[in-house]
Length: 234
Picture 1 (cartoon, one colour):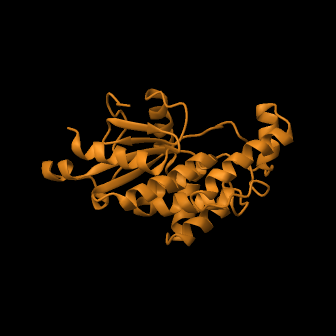
Picture 2 (tube, helix red, strand yellow):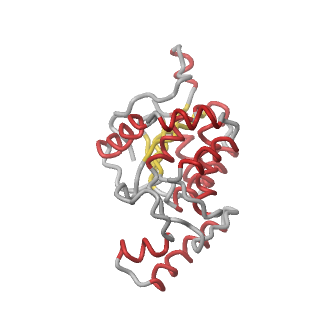
């Protein structure tokens, strides 16, 4: 799929400064949500593709916010399974069957998800943390996924977010201060608006060099093809 134009701001603070740098780099913008298991799976499949891609040192990955449920209450502390039963109008058994399929796919990339422990959360502040993480964003995204899907931690709890930031080498006091001050909120809102403008209705969604797009947790070879096409197409 081709994207006619990349309408989002350039959030990379280390953007290339010369034409040769721009020609050499491949930028992949990823829209995802911390509460999306397919985004977690897709991240790992993409990472595997990147490891096998000869030009991996020229690839810059930028993470963008998307919210599957922007109305989720903050701090409710409900089990994810209970929240989905209510949201989707399904029985608990049906939701568990849906989870079982996701778990099997996660296991194929070495991930063990524990939906019995997962806590439903509003992910807005988690996305703010990603914005504040700078060049540590990729590790913070992984840590947020683990916290939500493996460790059963509430990723809309400010103390949890600060602890995750510290675990990824960020200064805890600085992150807490910046979160308390509301930093990152405008950037997250910009991402959500960009997703609407680009008519993104499902995540993960990968855009290479602002032109080529792949939706979903695709197999590794599809991501390799995306990177290869981004490298060779004008």
